[in-house]
Image 1 (cartoon, helix red, strand yellow):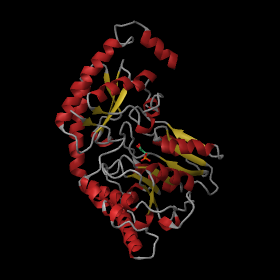
Image 2 (tube, protein in one colour):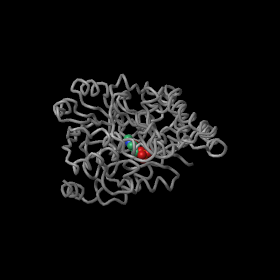
Image 3 (tube, rainbow, N blue to C red):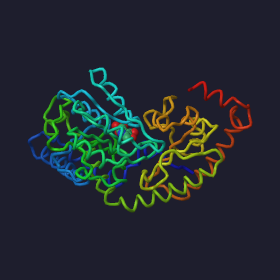
Length: 397
Ligand SMILES: Cc1ncc(COP(=O)(O)O)c(C=O)c1O
């Protein structure tokens, strides 16, 4: 059986999305900047896509900038917003690297940076956050729903606080879009990142919502595309596909979320029957994404388990997709307070509307089997070499 449960890394494109994109490769391939009828046709496709995407998050079409990825949107939001005098950026310890690393890089440009800690479920300490926001703060950037553990932050509360303190607020909604209703006005965000390929759209396209009053410094210079916000010939097919995926995802959200939640809960229940397994992130359904289950299997190496599951036809992941080839333990799990070994023994199962209960049962069975076999081989499983595990823990502390 082949089971894909790595939908937080990327998703299968919907056939409706492929169909909508197709003519823009073969017949309607004009450049939106061209003045002839093919250019006008392409420009119209871009405008319609922008309007559709804007509608999905209660924004105006002119507040959407298409980018080449969510990573680029995060870079544009952070670097573009921090240009006018203020020298402090505040974020959390559990951001995706496309936010965290950009902010670290801003330190080299003379910015003061603050990384706010989280509790054991991954919630940002709002009191601590409020204390740190001051008159020198240029930007607060807090991820909407975490890509590894699914924790959904209270954006409304953060947005309200930022507004009162007159500080710009950015959120990366790459993982939450089409799984949690997004209303930029209700959330009080000034900037918001969207990702296409996490919602059954194409790769190579992302978007940034920029509230109309926000002054952003352009990062990619050249032509006048994206109303002079981002130079470079538009990925018309990508934009059309992204908008189509968004439209379908928002329309079907209620039904898909209910399905994924049910499957995910059955998966978690089954996996937690395995001895020495624990769930990472919040337990309550309204506080976490419907499709993510992050589980630590103590006394097992996550990478070894992942590879064995892959041999059984199952695709899951250790850290987020971008860091899964690194042997560094996940910074998100470490921020929750997990020990080095525990972070290393964790897997992320991320579902989509295409998964089934047969697949869930198969995954539970295979994980049970492979965990048992790996523990038999493990030198530091309980009852093997007394004290070894504890010694290793100390060594890493
Ligand atoms: C929360 C979050 N933000 C940003 C990104 C970056 O997306 P992309 O690689 O499409 O630029 C990802 C992808 O894993 C993500 O999960």
